[in-house]
Image 1 (cartoon, rainbow, N blue to C red):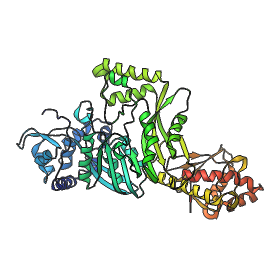
Image 2 (image 1 turned 180 degrees about the horizontal axis):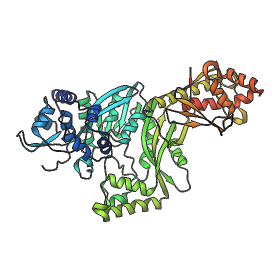
Image 3 (image 1 turned 45 degrees about the vertical axis):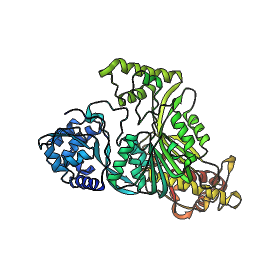
Image 4 (image 1 turned 45 degrees about the horizontal axis):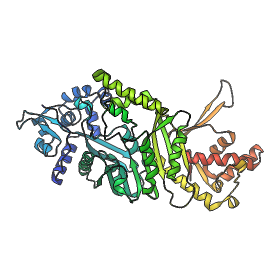
Length: 538
């Protein structure tokens, strides 16, 4: 069969969509259903974009889900009659009308091939479980060919990460900027009054529309670049997996194609910088923006300073977490392969583009590229914005959305306590020794240790006292802290019965230390432990 050109699902009648949805569910074409067809080896290989072990397993299985796996995920040809049995309501003819498959002829023995990738997706976030089917362009593993310039990406690591870190409390208006196949918009629709989804690619909007119809979700889809389609509009939540890849123009000139889904065609990391600086104009009071991005590490400059200048322009609460750093060679190799250039296929073009990438980075003093999360928050009232810019490279337990929401709520509560109470009327001891600002009123709170926190003690053989004591967070960002004696004692006493002020007084009496000295160490530490999720308010 001739290789299919890039296709987009066609506008469908509600009856066609209902029939397809019923067929996919009836065939057990779900995450669990596909998982049952594959052993661990085949599943792991497919995750690495190696299709052969999964193809062998699917060809030997008789379940309807196996035929759908072959057609829609593995790029395999199947007899028309086999697909008709797997989709009894829709049939091959209906799948053709929807633009999902290509068929060589009308005979039962004629082969059918998928025109798009269509796969099950299970959502597990704070809004509860959901099960959808997501259509996108067929990947390289299925076609054996490089991706097209207007390729519409399916669900990958970046989109899954963004979905898992997004806050999921109720929001009236949400914007999915650069929606692609629409998966972020589908997540947002579960806890939003309305969702606007934008993309510069009309093909992407076609996929997003089809996926929304298949999920029974209504989206406001708009074509345009970045924030242009929502000029002068404000939202309660903005999510974005923007085209953040830093690809110099010289690299495209050397032979690497411009990929719509990843290349913003801007100098360096300007696209992410401008988005961080400008998205605040589209946030309603108490609105949150969450996006993924790359930023450059320059010689002689801490990356935090670079990103910090973007945040200065934004003027909002900000939390930036860097998860990974790649050196220039690693970065170039990753995106050269993603763009379809390989040394074993076209060494001259590959090396020309590679050299252009390295030359650009060297000329601009780029020593590495960071990847991570950016969160921006517009306070509901007037106050000084807070900021945290950090690198967290260890493993984290997803989903993080609930943890992020808890951090935001705690930040807002602490800001209110500081404004409402003030040092002069603080409850219990509130000390600001050596200019350190503590939290007035925090001493009056009853706190408990979070359920996922464990205490670790390391002793030398035969010793009675630990040489190292640390607290480890099982959820959230998996942080580890090493508290001093006073703070460790205070945390150990946080069982919700006593206020923090009473714990401070008790430690002072027990150790015969001035209460102000104990408070000066314990209160700021307790504030930080609250923000990091080690402690919680009763």
